Length: 106
Image 1: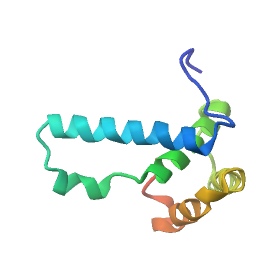
Image 2: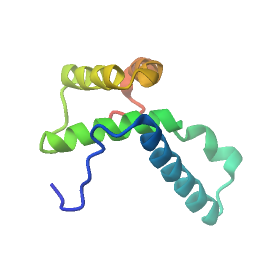
Image 3: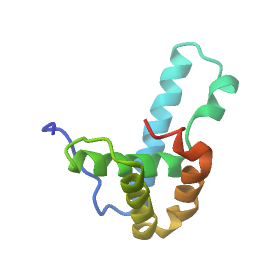
């Protein structure tokens, strides 16, 4: 693991959402600076809650030595995120259902 890796752990959902919103704002700003049309790229960006779930999932992968999780382990990790952060439950299930996870699984 990198020395600059900071796990989000048991941070409040408000803090996680604020971090995700800042990250999305940065992505939007960079794409605008590169001359991209927001009408073309805004639909492909994740929602704040989708980004929060993805970041929590990534933290779990880093804690496991960076190994890519099996499908069943990934399901358990996402389910645990929904249990730890109940307001994210709908987002977790929507992500699990969307193309069997192909949007975010990489």
